[in-house]
Length: 441
Image 1 (cartoon, rainbow, N blue to C red):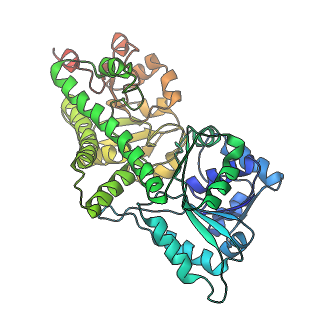
Image 2: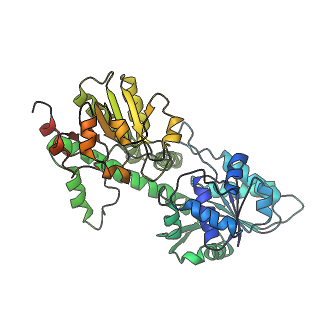
Image 3: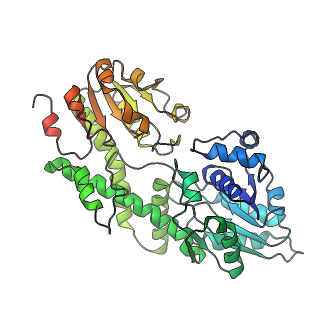
């Protein structure tokens, strides 16, 4: 099938490349001429394992093309995915300006039946507004048939290609049998389980899914605070809970909070969607509050154990909001580092891939070439992103390099490594043993 992807950001690019990989002819569109120029050369603007190889392969076999022309892509495609940004407004609403603009441009360039698919994360009833926008902007002398549908994405940064090629489900929101059959043809090579529903339900599934996962994280972070106070170990609590099949172990990891482009934005949006419907989703407001507080608690722990933060040299391992991505959007590291800078600390940091993006945001810190350069002369180290590279560090070497061998583990990555035995003062999250590690205890 000929498919257009309008918006070649994270979701659009992964979707376009993977659809080409399973046999479709795909045209990816973006207004950024520089980005499109690089993509035509096989250069991927984001870090996502496996994406670059598939992009080059499908450029070579001509199943994948890139353009800045919505007209060109619309006219030669049957299915058109809208995958543009939907950033949050100050009040938490999703800004749908880009979605509306694209819908209008699709309408004026249609030359036959089109299936227009929302891929961007949008609030319920957006599909109705997209359909109305297209209908209002169709050339008046032409009677062109079209369907609007919803196909929310569930891609995890760092494993997005694998997630697309091995979906646990594909959700489609349709209003006609013709649209459903086209969707089934699009995804047929993957043989997925398909959830077929109406557009509003499909739109809501994405917000509900991400908000529930965010709630699991915040719940465990709240549990970690109780563990600290009662001398319990949050890792064992999570282990005990996770064996219950009704609960499951996934997303029960306490730490410094969630970040990224999805959870914070989708929680905010779902709160606003609920308010507009007349329901006060107070539980989600608390999920958001707990997530913000967790970063504050971590900073307070550092301040408590260092005693004086001003002029202390603090090393940071990991900046991206999660491992296997260079995404710095809403990364907990940003708030934690800025809070320590305000207290007068000097920050050195290292991340395997996110430093180019971090430099645009965190301009008052020093960036190291590796963890050992960051550790040299530090009063303490913070582990903020659990990159696999950080599991394999030579901690005897790091201990010798540091001015004070104190490690604050914001992801409980080193909970079972016995760092205390080689001289470290070690603090995890929700481990309930800080009274043991107190200086002078």
